[in-house]
Amino acid sequence: MLVREKIASLDWNKRWNEPISLLLCSYFGEDYIHAAKAAYGIGFTHILFASRNGTVVCYRLESDTKNVGKRLAELFLQEKDAAHAWRDSLIQATDSLDEALSRPPKSFLVPENLHELDARLDSYLPVFIRVNIVPDFLPPDMAENAAAPLVEARAYAEHAYHAVEALFKKISEDIALKEKRNAGLLHNLLNEELRAYTETGKLPQEED
Image 1 (cartoon, rainbow, N blue to C red):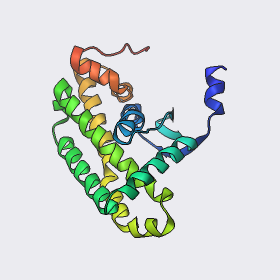
Image 2: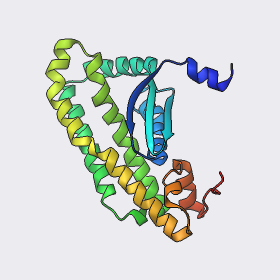
Image 3: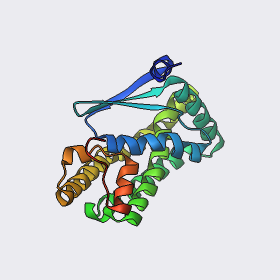
Image 4: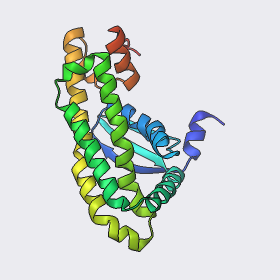
């Protein structure tokens, strides 16, 4: 089966559309697949980002969402007072990420500082994912009882997406100024390309 036909045959579900960069998408896509699996033993097998004119549409597989949701519900039921524990974990991860985001953007052009930011993103996204997904997979009475702390956590943490995007935009502008390149194009670097730049000082050719 051709790649395009294979992609079209999967059970995609549109999740959101936002005016964000492919750089942010590449970070969060990586975490949906790898960091979530590391944290919970199961992650998303495919994430699709479609970008057009500065707006990105995110698609996940409905089967992935069900599999991850069921696993998260199992973990939730095993943990004492999980709603408050998960709320507190997300607040802590958000505070840690916010602390990193408060640093000068140029500091993340040093490899070890970018690696630290990577680690904080890896800690943030899995706990954000579980707070968002698990309510749909809990028994109705338990979901109702858990709603208040989980909604509180989500409201506390949601700003991080846009805060990370703002940081990446400033980083791309700093690189563009230094390298005399187009900032808009650099804002759509992939995460491994940004990591490579901090280590080697080399950017992809513009035609790439």
